[in-house]
Length: 130
Image (cartoon, one colour):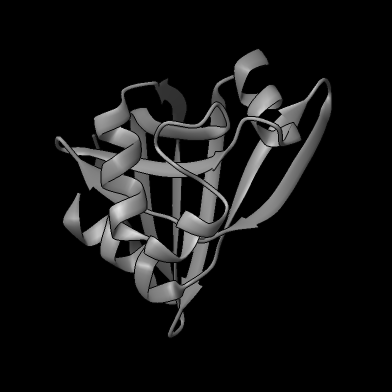
């Protein structure tokens, strides 16, 4: 799990894909944090991505750095606990200007049924299930 999270953090930006009805939607994200042994991301409940994940929790992220890429597929499950939100915001204090663990907008989600695939040209994929 640490390797997955570190890759995402080192990449700086990764892309999250969700479904909006029958239309795929992809957007850049930058938060990745491990809390209680689970990989979390963060967004705002007012954003379309939140509504898309509420309708269909299946998602995939993709990041690229130094000639290698990582794909993480699974279901993103909301964790409404203040402790989970606080852990994310403590890890990303720059978000505190827009979010607070006690507001009605901050949303943290963790991967369930996750499959991470590390790839690079010319080498076999490495798959980690979590």
